[in-house]
Amino acid sequence: MSGPILSIRGLEKRFAGIVATNNLSLDVQAGETHALIGPNGAGKTTLIAQLQGELTPDGGAISFDGADITREPAWRRARLGIARSFQITSVFPAFTALQNVALAAQARERHGFRFFKNASADSALTRPAMEALTTIGLDSRADIVAEDLSHGERRQLELAMALAMKPKLLLLDEPMAGMGRQDGQRMTKILAGLKQNYAILLVEHDMDAVFALADRVSVLVAGAVIATGDPAAIRSDSAVKAAYLGHKG
Amino acid sequence: MAETKATLAKADGAATRVFAPIVLLALLALAPTLSNAVDNPFLIRLFTRAVIFAMAAVALNVVLGYGGLVSLMHAGLAGIGAYAVAILAFHDYDGSKFVGIFPGTGNLAISIPLAMILAGLGAAITGVVSLRTSGAYFIMITLAFNQMLYYFFVALQKYGGDDGLQILGSLDFFGLDVSKRATFYYFALAALTVETAFFALLVESRFGIILRACAQNERRVVALGVPPLRYKVAAFAISGAAAGLAGAMWATGQQFVSPSDLSWVRSGDYIVMAVLGGMGLVWGPVLGAIVYVLLEAFLPAWTQFWQAPFGVVVILIVVFLRGGLLDLVGAKGARGNGGGRG
Image 1 (cartoon, one colour):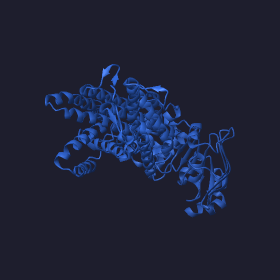
Image 2: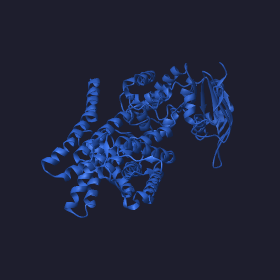
Image 3: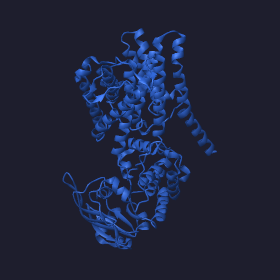
Image 4: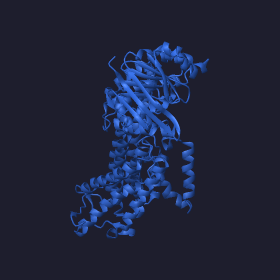
């Protein structure tokens, strides 16, 4: 391991008196899958949004790949290599699955000011898009309009879009949210395949998935990290049990 | 099996995208012949009006139907183009110079590109401000800009102020005399054809895909690494330049322009034409403009309060044909951005 790809120091975020992120420090090492667990309202999605750039922190610093990105706008962070998949599926409903992913590939290529060539027939975009769909197992549904895909397929599409950005870090906000058992298991398998190639910060409620995938786990309670360690250590940590796992019985 | 179906769907899409507008434009090209045959010059004037309105509505629809931006300033942008042609013609006629520096011209090969550049610049500058907002705020800001343009031209006493500006000299396009009704009609129709073809390519390009994506889910566009504002400003400027072209044609065809052509109500009319025709395809508003102009011409013969039945027709079309008149010609399910209408 060559040091952290993402380093968060003393991060603070308040909303009208509510402390959402409280002096939070966390490292994601290059190549590791780092799971973030915690009860509802612990501030997991707020943290992801600050890492991706949609929210600006009130204090603290975020550095990514050796550069301070605390004040960088979201679109530039995406170009630097941070890809987020959203907790609530966020795709382009009127585009086909392939067009959705091709747009992600196009964003990476940056040549947005081209006015005449048909983008949907541009193999420089459709080839990498098709690769991402294949990786995620959605290639047979490439020509289906996103709003006609099933919930599970749209979760997969969401992930394929993130992959097509060829990121260095994946921020996955509950990739299994709303999935049935079978879809969830499929998604776990997909993520297990991805974890070889990407650093991943994974927010997930499904503990089976977390313990199957994570190299390390951090526990977030009330906006602060109360414990970080390998899955076995977290499972047996008494503070974690009391704050979180205990509630689950 | 599935592949055959997909291929068929694609062929079907090509038919409505490429074939239908060609047929429509070819039909429009028959208007002068028809007008001669029935010896009624009113017809050609009517279709000239329809073609020019269509140019403005097609321009608007690129930001409205594909970009999800309800602009109420396209009459103002078209007005910039119209006044550019008229003011250049004014100085050409009396031999004076614009602000004492620039000579006038009656050559449309110069004044039309200039009209487009000025309208495009106007759109870009106002767009930088207005496109930072969205929804009702965007509508209100574009309305305000439209009124600013309106009163600006009202205040230009030298160029007719409230009364408008008559074009007294002759206008030509590389020697083509456009004062003949039929000649001008073909000229305007050619411009509409070029405009429609241009936008048909644009909305499928990388640029067009980003514009349509912004309309569906701007948050996701940002997360993918694309800053939306610059693309929206560029789209607004291109749309504005095309509206400027429509305005330039309007001034040329009427030999006259007045501030009333810039009223925000006219901006609203362009929206009605786009919605009426269908926002899902680039050429949908052409249908809308034709129907609009026909209703506007023939309903008053039936009742003096023609706006009332006109309103009923618009409501019926919007309620029963969610995709506008495009649905009637088999382009059902055509998509613009197309998230706007779900």
